[in-house]
Image (cartoon, rainbow, N blue to C red; front, side, top):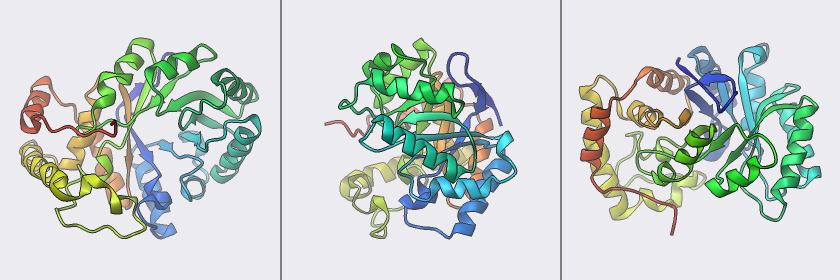
Length: 305
């Protein structure tokens, strides 16, 4: 597994990070034994970088059960998730994460989203206190704009940013990624497979169960999904011609951006963990990227209005 430096003066981390939103039940529940085996398979495959959050349901506890006896070999991240960035809530969320993960420190602790109600100067001060106490080692942000990241860095070191970035959702490639590259901030790109749009597993007409958050997601419905599916069918052929498959291509594509340190990839089975890990050694060339752009044409998706 390749590694890259996480931000200026940060540690070396694997280029693939296991995201645990889905393992925690975000895409409908899975058996605990299966989730634990999936985490352990990822670690055994070189994905020793594990990401979770306060609101990832059972995610932190599953990691804690899966990593007993292996903590020293891992880089663990979590996030304070709620709309509450008060000192009391951050303390509670951090202590809960430490307990669930079964550790006395978290390598990277992140703000899951900006919360203007609490001045960022105060929030960073709280995080720095926990860093100085040895409970966290590095500080990161998620879903922050370049201006919000810049403001946070005025009050303490920010080692990483976690933006949504994939072949389909490229907005951050024009905004936060160039900013992070210029300012020495590591990028943890999340949702590289766009919640499964780039996995190659789903065809038009697929119906997700009600407890799967994609059940009502518009990008999996109607003409929009038909356009996406037509593109991914072309990508499948391109990937196969290169001895790979669509999901590995989606991961490798995010890693081709010079700002990206790691791609956060979910998995629901041990085999998916092992399969995703193999994308970590695929380096797309400039010619590869041009050919993909030609296949994609003007198809771009956005959460922005």
